[in-house]
Image 1 (cartoon, rainbow, N blue to C red):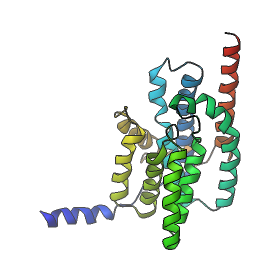
Image 2: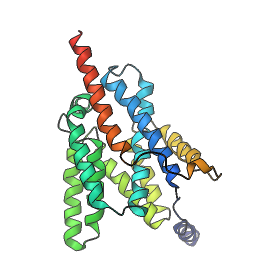
Image 3: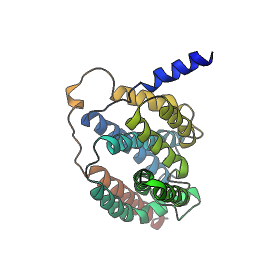
Image 4: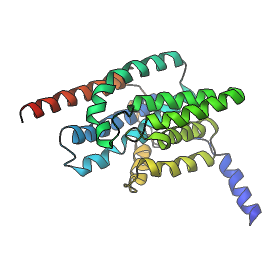
Length: 245
């Protein structure tokens, strides 16, 4: 029995992680942004009146994480640019995020989601720099999770991203199994989202060939600008609603 399990594990370790074309990644990003927008509109303008919008919003972070982890492993040639953009747009979005999103999580000091990806990048980068890097990465993971809690997925969000990075870098079955386990904390209360997320990725990155999905169609800064802009718009509209009584 032990030999059969070992053979199954070794066979699984030889399985490669999926690969995405630029067009497929853009489709995942677009769907993630739409689901995030629905969730934020429901929280910021509709006072959570439509639970289905919150459920739909659970798609956003896992899909963004898949795109980020894949790009980190395969297309990450300008880390300084990523850091500067994440800091600039993260700081720009923090004020409306504070009022629109974080306050609903009863933690008004929570950092927004751009810092989640920035901290995950830092942990991944530090981890491979010897013993000192491991200590620094552990501290960043620990205190970063505090700063991201709860609205920006905290430690389980960071863990999910890092597990995906391991999967896209090394393949096998251990990292995707870890990612699936951590995903349960990301989509807590919505267990059916497991199947929805997997089905969404399969639809976008399925085995059939569609020419339009091979070519990138989103502008490079679209997500950064869209993230900050939609929060400011929702914040401004919410202020108008309060002023009108």
